[in-house]
Image (cartoon, rainbow, N blue to C red; front, side):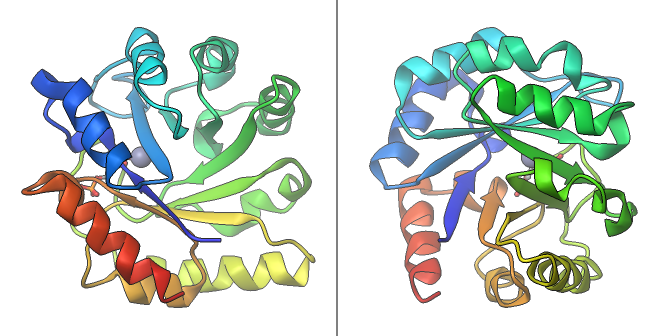
Amino acid sequence: MYFLSPSMLASDYSRLGEEIRTIDEAGTPYIHVDIMDGNFVPSINFGMPVVRAFRKMTDKVLDVHLMVEEPDRYVAEFADCGADIITVHAEACTHLHRTLQHIRSLGKKAGVALNPATPLSVLDYVLDEADMILLMSVNPGFGGQPYIPAVTGKIRDLREKLTAAGKDTDIEVDGGINLKNLSEILDAGANVIVAGSSVFKGDAAANVRAFLEAMRAY
Ligand code: DX5
Ligand code: ZN
């Protein structure tokens, strides 16, 4: 299954409710919610109360990407706020295995995110605990950056690794995705697509529909 996950980081924060309604009604299955702590990544954006408000506005899957140091401290709270998928960075967890188990124990899907420079080998002993692997295709912290081309080979390598392990774990790719490079990313083996600026710049409803149409071919 293929899923679009528009990133609220790129939305107009003065119209958050309207932006959620627009992408929800346009048919997006997932909504990507980036959380930044000003420590793991340089920037700070929104936190738990905003996720709780999103939960009231939509029934779609809330795909929460924690760009936060030692996220174990916060996963219970994000679960309580209504997150459906909670993704943590391997680089930010001292006890990644435990954190993934913690997320699942809360009844949520557990994701592991890797920065562009982080090798896939960090996943070797946690594949059984992960429902999704998020490959960053930009350095995390900001929307609107260009896609790093080397990540396409990394997606392919990860899909091969998962298949060899007998798993069909979701592969999410995040950063710099647009309608032009989408097919290269899907062809490589990704099935969850984050799109920030390419959805919210211009007509968000039309952009969601265009992504969904392009993904329907897969
Ligand atoms: C980057 C965030 C992304 C970001 C993607 O640190 O994790 O989710 O919103 O934005 P675009 O699609 O504009 O690169
Ligand atoms: Zn993200």
